[in-house]
Amino acid sequence: MQVRTVELDIVRPADSASAATAPGYGTRPHGVATSPSDALESVETLRFSDAGLVDGDLVYPPYISDAFTIDRGLTLLADALGGARSFGAITLSNPGGALDSTILTRINDHLPVRIHAGRKRWDGTRGIWVDPAASDLVPVFAGLGRGWRPDRTSVAVDLLDATYWLDNAMPVTLYGGTGKLDGDANVAGRAMPRLRGTACNLTPTLIDSVNYVYQVSDGPAAITALYEGGYAGGIAAGGTVDDLYATSPAPGTYTVQTGNNGTWFRLGTKPVYAITIDAVGQFRSGAAPTAVVDILRQVLLEDVAMPASCIDAGWPAVSPATPWPGGWYWDGSGSVTGAEAVSTLLSGLGLSLVPTRTGTLRPILLTAPSRTAQPVAALTADVITEITAASLDASLDPPTWRWRIGWQHNFTPQPAGSTLHPQIPADRQSLVAQTDRAAVWWSGDIKSRWRVPNDPALITTALASAADAQTIADRHGALWGVQRRLWAVSVPQDYAWSLDLGDPVWLQAPAVGLTGGAPGIVVGEQIQSSDPYVTFQILV
Image (cartoon, rainbow, N blue to C red; front, side, top):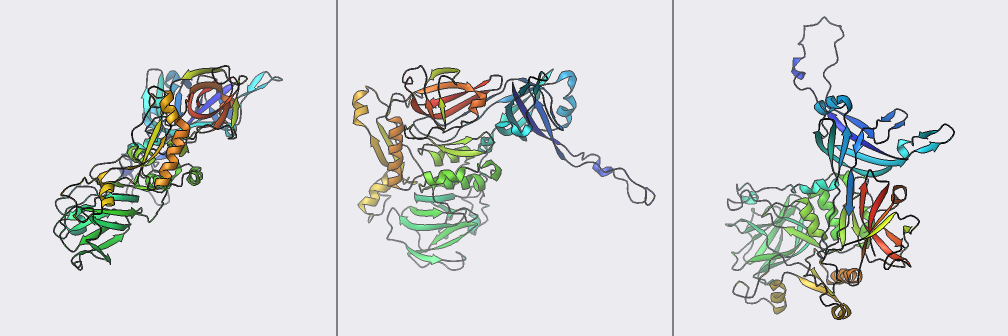
């Protein structure tokens, strides 16, 4: 017999109204005991179940009255953007108004919610179902609740997973316009630029148009090349200083001031053409990851201000499989949400940032199913309760005959013309004229066999290396350069908890292409609490 439990953390607010009514000195005899002061804000935990459960002092009354649904999945789109979501809601019975007082006096908005599942054991001797220990239940969902939604005889609580943190705009530092490093009136109210990792041909922010002072980032950074109109030989590096305004740089040079509060440079001569730079940026804490996936982790922790508890402990294990250096530059001209930062950094890499069942975020790399991979489980007719065909996105079916993966993104395209320096080399002129250079995978066989095969547009990535871009293009070709099929496979819940997104499986069923078995990858999961099974999406 299945049993599911829900634990909701709630807050009992402090009674601020009565905190100022404490009697003054002399209103009571010395030594007389006084009543306790008003309680400060405190956290409590509500526990419920769908079939009732008791484990020692822990009681889970059977108040869960309606099914909740949780969906998770990897990104299956030609643009290969990262990110996935879980959704759902819990409905609790409110018999005779038993929860009225809790709803009116307790707050559960954006506080932890945990859902577990297990199975009761039948005791044939006594003829009863025996409750499992709460510690033996397996996690199904962990996230946040979003307030009470009471009805006449019930109350619902919407669920938020850890990706909720990505909806917020990344905190920024604004220019005050008071002069010097605080910027002049031209940039007052604008956000400071942000450079994380390696960036090519970015335009720094001119914050002092009189003294020719530019800001590169809000944290430490190293300028690897400075260009005027695309030409690197006109303005020479003049060293690093503690104060840009203490001494003007010599004509034809620039000096740099850098530290945890930002990086700036000052020109000794008014430029004739646009100033751009190549640079490598660190975080304000001094952290300096180089791989894109590690930069993303630090962005979530520092720039998005996501709690460290939301980062999955298994994240570091992904880094050795994705050691691709790169970076990105945000110029401060507009607000950027955490979700936008994730999509930008993971674009084209075949990675999805997904919420785990324990409430953390972990990147998962989608690779082609392989017969040589050791499957986590075998899904055969004896465990499958239902199997149906599902549809792939139209951008992936029919197969793709060509993948173009961009690298060394050019943040300031500069077409040929009078805006370029007369001495700019031909190779540099060609580079700055295009937004991205591309690594290409293609298949003449797919092109000839299919009348209208897919041909995705060039995908902009945060990658810095042509070799890494080629590696990823080849991975996409191996994955999507053949006919793939997506199957919705339902298995009993007890069996399902051993599987997770990204796991390799062996799928054998009485369906087209599966009668002899085929390797597959778990790419999606749907849990309906009222059903005794979990439905996985398997890519084969």
